Image (cartoon, rainbow, N blue to C red; front, top):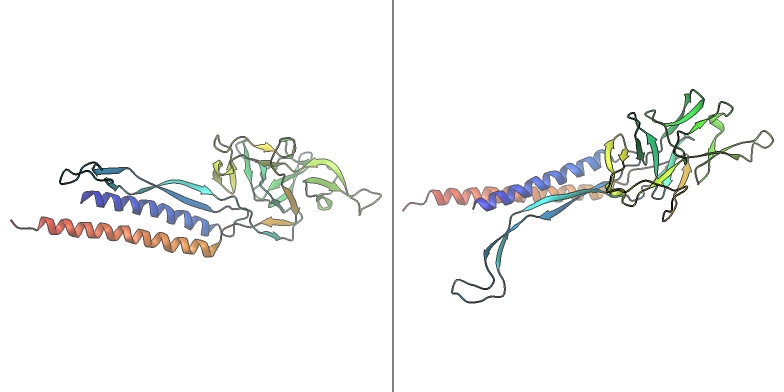
Length: 273
């Protein structure tokens, strides 16, 4: 009887994590570049009550008697599926179409990666620097901070699909040319292995593999940039609500199993000889 209590309690703990994950998805439904997370489960150990070669009468039988001990969370993985690309009113907003990530320099000096392309130009010591909405420098394709010289007007900068920065010439404003700077795009062999650190930033891990620079490294398919667009979250609210109801019902069933086991134990304790 105690086995049923622990088994149901393990199920309640697993479903609570599932609800936490779904709640986080719903909370980030409007977060730019957010990727939905999915909770995965696995069964716990099984106890063998009776071997398959014996029975109560000593006869052989083809199956044994095993009882499971519940479930636990095996992983919470991010689903890196392309989100919808929405047009904005800013020329410094960029959406990635493909598997790439932007590289940014964190406050601790380490390199982080993000799908949030809500950027802007800030005044730097040598001109203008492309940075995130939090002021973190955006990396160029050569791995350095992307800084424009003071001779350029940031409002006239355009970006092509490969990430090259273009600037109109004095002779022909309708035919901008590349100025030798390019927004860096990076890919990972296993993006689900990236660590989420908050503020839409991701950190490279051994599970994700090293960052592959799309400009110099061999990747399966290169990404493209769309200027004046942002990638929306790929969370499907209808799907998440269905998953939330399913998790709630599973939690209630496990709770009912505990109540039933407690009632049966109470009846057993009240038996009179």
